[in-house]
Image 1: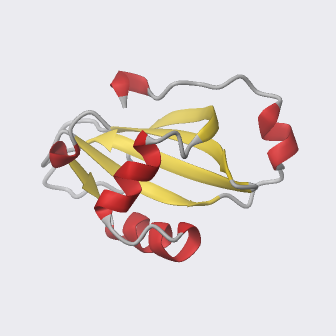
Image 2 (image 1 turned 60 degrees about the horizontal axis):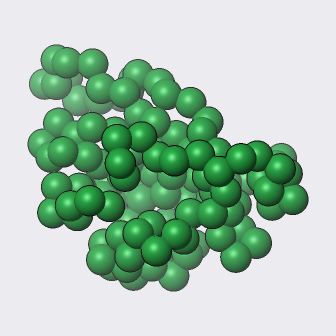
Length: 115
């Protein structure tokens, strides 16, 4: 990531990164992302954040991606933050029906905005 100081990681994403990928700190998560830990990135969608706090008036969109890592299929979602530049909203194993073999058939996608 370009500047980890401007990126917040939501609590559930931190917990799942630790429990499911062995990434114990925010620094570990950023190193994983920065060192191509997200292999065969596949864009899923962009959606409006439905459960945002009422005090936030502007529309905030969440970008979602699937990725492979060591025979695991993962899911990452991030958004432009309301209190920081970016926020990693979700980071966890993906239990969809896609397999790592299926993921390898898709071209690698780059994350938006240089992340």
